[in-house]
Amino acid sequence: MSRNKGRKSEGVGGAGISRRRLIGSAGAAGATGLVLGAAGGAGGYAATSDEPAPLTAVGSTEAMFHGKHQPGITTPLQARGHLIAFDLAPGAGRKEAAALMRRWSVLAQLLMAGKPAGGGTGHDTGVALDAGPSSLTVTFGFGRTFFERTGLVSRRPAALDPLPPFSSDHLDAKRSNGDLWVQIGSDDALVAFHALRTIQKEAGATARVRWQMNGFNRTPGATARPMTARNLMGQIDGTGNPKPEESDFDRRIFVPSADAAGTSGASEGSSSSASAHEWMAGGSYAVVRRIRMLLDDWEKLTVDRQERVIGRRKADGAPLSGGSETTGMDLEKAGRDGRLLIPDNAHARISSPEKNGGAAMLRRPFSYHDGISTDGTPDAGLLFVCWQADPFRGFVPVQRKLDRGDALSPFIRHEASGVFAVPGGTAPGEYVGQRLLEG
Image (cartoon, rainbow, N blue to C red; front, side):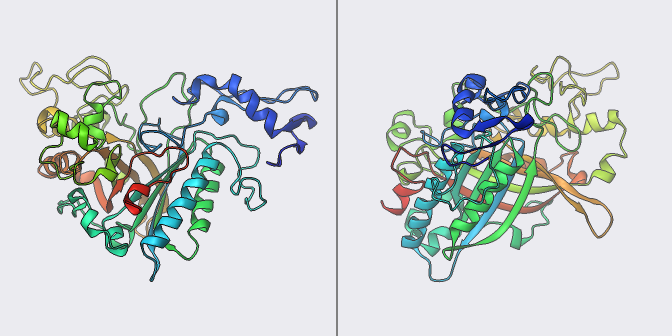
């Protein structure tokens, strides 16, 4: 199907389906999912040749590019993801970076709306023809070295200081950090690849790919009801995530404006002080880790042993202290034998906010599988992405605690790492990072 208005192509059964009618019909078919994401099943093409078929609920779901925050942070998990880091090319500086961010922002807005790159000028690759927005999000961030390359070191937040080393680190420097970071997510693999390819091409001579990682999650509608995702260990993963409806969610996840910080005192003394770095207001810090799961070792454990390592039941994610997935953990509850039901070294216990001074982060990962390593074991695991207003109050204290005795540690290995400052969202006519690059 052509993306140019007025042109049609043959659909299933020979039905002519115009893209304009597809998107128009999608408003009715997927209206409830425009912001929150569709959880229902997929519909089919119309059986008759005289009525254009609407996109399925999955295809019609559209995330908004403009807003207080960038998309891809609170957006529901998507089925396909790409994480990619770029380094500015030699000789490229602040001016070139600003021009690139302007181009990337225009492209992201078009692609997220289900429109062709280039606005129909013929420069689109055609990879995502026939698809709607499919929950596409494109999120942009800046690494520590970006500020050196652009002469903006004085505006670099202390929250981008290097993370401390951890005992589970086996980090590959070539797959870590980077000047620029892009997160792409979609519920359709071709839509995600189309965005990836478009972003890569538009970098042109300004920036070069440093590393790329590809991930996936369960497809919306694949379960009878919306569920917390499972990771490749088979565990429900993300139960304890902060919820947007919680009163302190914004304070924990997003950098406040200088006025808000001064009023609430929430960021006083924080390394991500909004008063010093107002360009980050409404933004967040992403910690990105490629965590390999040693699945051959993990799968040798009995389900009972796996549950004691995690501290939750594998079947439904409920804490071993009882209840359902959303029941709070009773960390003091013991069994008939006097042992704690949730062991002292269980992953869920050690990582809980109650054991980390209230430290919290919004975990939004993708699983990955990159084939079989030379030793014959699966190169698979988690592309861990977590969001917080300050990584030294979110990720770091939790990871330090895990580093000192997490029962899960023997079954995982951290192989790549990065921290990125992700500015707030944009208004129409603005580009991501404009307040930094033009301020």
